View 1 (cartoon, helix red, strand yellow):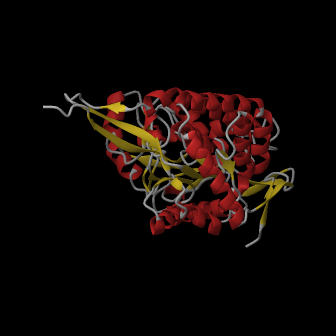
View 2: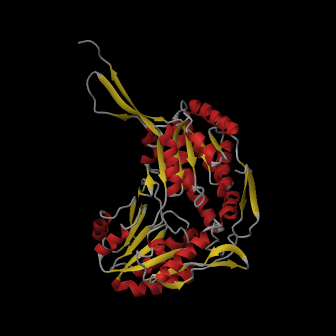
View 3: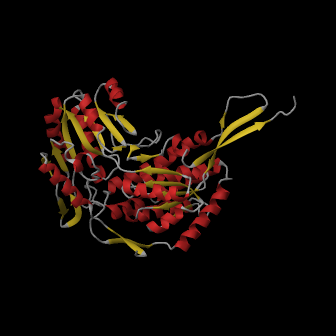
Length: 467
C-alpha cells in the first residue's frame, strides 16, 4: 500500500493536499501521548473540561472561513452549506456542553439507612473516532466533544477524502489549551487502524461509514477486545406524503431533504411514497421545486446549491440505478446522467424518477447516496408502512400530514431510529441519534450520547458497622 495519499478537488481536479500515512511506530507514539493525556485529564474537574470545550468552540469559530473553504475544496460541498456546517458544529458542541453536568453527574439511589450507594460515569480511556467525509465536522463533533467532556482523550482517524477536517479539530483544541495528546488527528491505513483497535488503551471505537466497513470494524474489535463500538452506517430514508399533507410545504422540504449536499447524507430522503390522491400534483410540484432550488456550479460560487460528487465512483453507480429503474418501468422525469459544468467537475444531474417500485432494487432498496430520488404511489397508510419497512436500513423516516394521531400511529410501526412529522434530514442534539437494522448500533448526541464514552462504576458503601 502507498505510504501517501492525495486529496483532489471534485470540481477542479486540482490537488488540495497530500498527506503521509503514519507508520506503526508513529501511531504507537500517538497512542502513548493519548493515554498519558487521558490519565491526567480524567482527574480534571468537569468545570475545567467544560471550559476547554468552550474555548475549542471559540477557536473553531475564529477559523470558520478556512475550515469551510477546506470542506468545499476537499469534497465539493457548496461553500454556503460548508459555512452552515461549521456553525452547526459549534452549536452542537455547545449543546453537548450544556448537557454534560446532568449527564455526567453521579446517579444516586434510593437511600438505605447505613449505606451510601451511587453510580458514577467514568471515562473509558482513549476513544478512536473513525469519521466520514460527507458531513466531516458534524459526524466528528458528535463523538469528540462528549468524549473530552467525559474525561477521555480522542484519536480522530478521518476519511482520507476530508483529512484536513480531522486536523482542524486537533488544531482548535490545541489553540484552546488542551494538554498535549488529548485530541489528535491520525492518518492511518486499514492495517494500522486494525492494530490500533487491538490496543488496550482504546476504550471505545466509533465508526461512521459503509455497512461493509462497519462489519470489518466490528469483527476487528470482537477478535481481541470486549469494548463497545458505535456504528453509524447506511440509510435509505423514506418519506410518506399522506392525503392531508400541506403539499407545497412537503414538496419544498422533501426536495431539499433529497438533494441537499448532493444527496450525500445518511439521513437524506432517498425514497418517497405519495398517496394516490395527491400523487400527480406532488410530481408536478417537485419538478418545479427542483428547478427553483437546484443550481449546479462551482461550489465556491455563492449561487451554487448543488456541488459535484465527492467520490469518483459515485456518478457511474447512480447511472446504473437510473438504467435499472428505467428498464423496470420507472419514468425518469429529469436528470439521471453524469455531467460537468463548464467542462469541470464530476456532477450528477439531479434525478426524479416516478412510478418507482421495489423491483428497482438500487433506487428503492439499496443506498444511493446521491442526487436521485424515487417516488412511488401508495393506496393507503398500511401500504406506505409496508414499503417504508421494506429496506435493510432504518435511520430516519418521515410523514407529511396535518394529523398528529396519524403520525403517532404510523411512527409506532415504522422500523427506524428517528421518526419525523413534517420534517426530515435533521439532527436534534437533545435527542439520541441512533439507527436500527443495517443503519448501525449505539447512540450519539443527547444525554444518552455520553453512555458510549463512559463506563458505569457502582459505589456501595456501608457507613455503619455497629449494631
